[in-house]
Image (cartoon, rainbow, N blue to C red):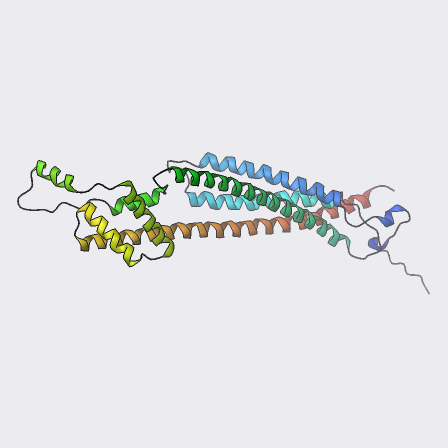
Amino acid sequence: MTDTTYIERDVVVPAGDDASKTPFSWSAAIAGTFAAMAVTFIVVALGSGIGLSFASPYGSGPSATSLTVAAAVWLVMAQALGFATGGYLAGRLRSPAYDGVIGETAFRDAAQGFIVWALGAVAMGAVLIALGYFAASATARVAAGAATAAARSDQASTSAATDYFVDLLFRPGPAPATANAPRPSDTVGAAGTQPALSAETRAEATRVLVRSVAQGRLDDGDRAYLAQVVSARTGLPPDEAQRRVTEVEGKARAAAKEAADKTAKAGAYFSFWTFMSLLFGGAAATLAGMLGGQLRDAEGRMAPG
C-alpha cells in the first residue's frame, strides 16, 4: 500500500486568523469603484475635448449624426476602460480566503469585480436622479415665474414654431393679375381697407392651432372661425381661406410629429447606448477582477517562504 497525497491550493486551511478572513472585501470594492469612476470621468473629459475641437457651428466639421455615434462609442469605451481598472484593482487588493472551498477563487475574484461595477452603476444612477430632480425643480420654478409673467401680460407666450405657422396662416394672398393694373395709390388704398391683425386675434389663433396639434384634429367650428378670420385679414375668398387653414393645420401637425419622433428616437438611442456601456463595463470589471486575482495568486506562490 502506498500513500497518495492530493495537494489542492484552494483546500489549504492555515491556522490562525487567515482561516477566518471573509472571501469578500468591501474596502477593495469601494476603492475599485472610486478608481473606475475617476478613470471614466477622465476618458469622457478627453473625448468631450476631442469632439468639441472637431465640431463647428458653420457645418464645416463632421455631421451631428457622426458626432453622436462617435460620442456613444467613446462612452462605451470609457465605461469599459474605467470599470476594467476598478475591477482589476479590487481583485488584486482582495485577500485570498482559504476556507476549504474548492475552485471558488476565480468566482470570488469575478464577483469582486462585478460588485465594483454594481456599486458604480448605482452611484451614477443616484447622481443622474439627483441631477434630474434639481433640473425638474429649476424648470418648475422657471415655469411658475413664466406663468406669473404671462398672467400680468396681455400677450401669450408662444414658441417660434407656432409663431411661424400663425404668420403663414395670415400671410396676404397674391394680388390678382388683371389687364388693367391698378395704380400704386389704388393698391395702397385697397391694402389699407383690410383690418389689421390684433394681438388678441393672433393669440386666439395660436391657441386654436396648439389645441388642434395636441388633439390631432381641428374642430369644425374652429376651422370655420379661422377661415373667416383669414378671409377677412388677407382678402382671400372663403374657399381659399378654408384651404389655407387646412394646409397650415397639416404642416403644424407634421412639424409637431417630426419633433416628437426626433425626441423619441433620441431617447431610444440614449437608452440603447447606456445599456451597451453598462454591459461592456460589467463584463470588463468581471474579467479584470479575475485577472487581478490570478496575478495576485501567481505572485503569492512565487514569494519566498
